[in-house]
Amino acid sequence: MDKLRVGVLGATGLVGQRFVHLLSRHPWFRLEYLAASLGSAGRRYEDVVSWYMGSELDDRLKGFILGNASDPASVPRDLDVVFSALPSSVAMDVEVPLARNGFLVVSNASPMRLERDVPLLNPEVNYEHIKALELQARLRGWRGGLIKNPNCSTAILTLSLAPLRKYCLREVIVTTLQAISGAGLRGVNAYSIVDNVIPYIEREEFKLREETRKILGRLSSDGVEPGDVRVSATTARVPVLDGHMESVHVRLERAFDVGEVLDELKAFSSLPQELGLPTAPKRPIVVMLDRDRPQPRLDRYVEGGMAVAVGRVEAAESLPGRWLKYVVLGHNTVRGAAGTAVLIAELYFKMEGMV
Ligand SMILES: NC(=O)c1ccc[n+]([C@@H]2O[C@H](COP(=O)([O-])OP(=O)(O)OC[C@H]3O[C@@H](n4cnc5c(N)ncnc54)[C@H](OP(=O)(O)O)[C@@H]3O)[C@@H](O)[C@H]2O)c1
Image (cartoon, rainbow, N blue to C red; front, side):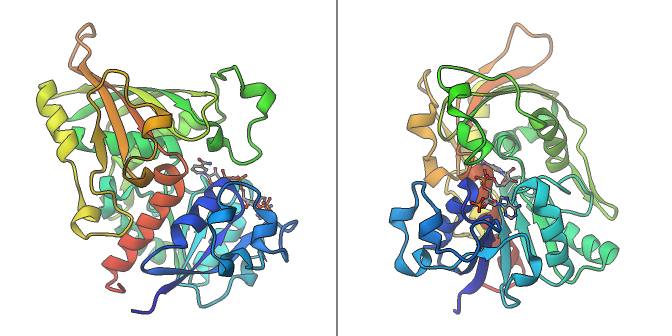
């Protein structure tokens, strides 16, 4: 099989470098185009990336001359998919013209995530929402398509919630401890975060609430309708490099037994596993029984960073109603960003019969 041709916009950032790393060894995809800001355009990839992936790159990728990611017209016409790791401030101006002009765009940026005709996909949780692309094409007249992957903490949370839907989710209360890398390469200044915790992340609580409701929602002929679940989030930045941890309380309508819940979490698998997609983790949820796990340093790379690690699963008996509590950890630039976007593209091409 000829490999599908792919490009990455924002390829020099933390998510972009993760994309390049994942795609450089991909069995179906071949990297053909990398682009970054105007300041980096025209320079060799290895001369611009100063972070950790550089030394692992093969010579072909090291020598790529970066394109200008803010100019959609410079994206080569023959790409099968464009992955976007652009800042939200520029994403729409680039992604929309690309989708309109026939490109499939899978994007990490937040604009348009909540539009009813834009699939917001966490593949194991809501793969069926990919069909919202048909409505998108009808409503907007685009020749290509735009798919979003969720905000990092939402991707991690919703994967852990997926098997709990059988107990009928009613409310979710989540408190996050988010890694520095979640804010991007120049996001948090060292003096603010070392020896510190910052109990606020701009717009993160809104994203966790509304994106979770959309992902757990239902696809109808009018697009995706948010699910009937209440979500309250508190988000904090902590001095960890990679890996978001989340303390979660969930109110379930149906009676549950903790042992049975543990079995459901361990056994959870979905369409990406059935289809054998290359980036799909064998076990999307890895259950940890030691009381002091999961931990970012030890557990962020479970299943190559594509699974979430869940521990401390207990009934919260002091609360009225049926509350379950647990801790979940996931790799924010893998499961929370580039890895999920690659998985989405694999799902798309498999469903289209192109691989
Ligand atoms: N970090 C995470 O864990 C995470 C998780 C989920 C989603 N996201 C989202 O993913 C996107 C990328 O995040 P990141 O953490 O990788 O950010 P980042 O490290 O700041 O990287 C930003 C990338 O965009 C390029 N860029 C900056 N300004 C640009 C402009 N005006 N025009 C064109 N390109 C421009 C940068 O190129 P230069 O190197 O040339 O400046 C760089 O390649 C954001 O929308 C973010 O919200 C991030």
